[in-house]
Length: 611
Image: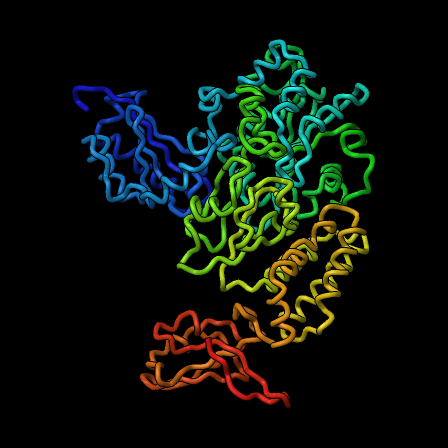
């Protein structure tokens, strides 16, 4: 360090998980330790420390990259007290602290990915426009305004094969072309950032990690279709994304990328933020438009489609966050580069939120066409705790559950639809042997039923009836004809509902019926939950020969249903027990057993079958 001046970059993850894990304190600690060691003064601008967005492997935060003359070392689970040693041994001494480096799981997690939308997330400071410009940002805007016609821009997007990343995958270029062909006049661009799927956080992470890529995509889209006004519709539950988006818009205006006469070219375009209240139905484009207009977020019948009559009756293009974030890279690197990735009809990459019963949870981006098996077992590291894989739920409440024997299917729009799921915004929830598929279907039906706007009868009443049937089955009160009724009603709801929420709400029911019918039959015929997850079909007891009388179960019970003296076997009063499972979770000796009451032919309880 004394003889050679090196360029040093310190990148601290400041996505939501990184912040929660202590990212701000870690960043401050680096500043204090570098100043104490005299590094900052000696290297001046060659030593930088800054915040970055989500780095993907959220379960390892706080993640810190130390880059010295191009060599990157990544540390995991970093706490403020660890910083002094990293500065002393690595930055000053040149020897990375091996004890705290990421392991092979982290490298495998990233090595198999191909990043486009996420290529700058986790690399640049999301609150500094200069960092984005240095990485090539706003070059796409400069190029199109320097002489590429709007028609040529649209043709390039069409040739790329980019499809909408927020739902069924409508071709982006065709949507832009339809809006371009509308009569001259006021037109709008809307970025749909109303990401409401349980377990999904892709769009939020992009806006938090690289908001300028989305703004640049909107500017290019506005130029292509002839729009002068744009909106980002984002739910208020994303405060960090909103804060960084506001900063990015302000910085873009200062640099003349937004506003009047952009870069002196005569193009006028500006962007406003509209906060949503978190209604899932507002992810549907006509409901979203109604919300921006100040009306209740309820869908309307189509046609007319938004490209012809959208916001305030004017031609409107609505794209989601990931779709727009792809645009700058397509313009900069070309349609051929983008279309070289993926499958014949599903080009490019897709961002997924990998969650559930999986070892490596986080945010990933992979080429279209990668198999679900490779995503789950290579990138995701397989099932947590050595449990057996059961299914992967894809597409959120509008999607479906895919079983193990179909894991080798390549992920693309057409394949997922054939399997009874959809791409959606990219939620991927992994389920294991302890998950009951009846409960999974019931959970998503409950979600969509509660989020239904109630405008049309098939969705408002149909989802309620579907939920009631599933609830009855999960309690062991199902009837033999319930499965036929479930399937028939599901198809009626899909066919007759007004918007995409109702049309796709039965997907979790139909896919679980298709691939896991035996579990439904067990609930109905045997009054048994094969996964031992349904509370109504389970009872808890304590084996006296294993109970040590430690009292842990008594302390965990919220209704005082457990009694017993210290160091003597305890017992559960089933009349009081609410079957919460707290005793089962805390017992260290395996004395608490979960099972079901087996009934004889006369309906009398005979014995308890333990798990």
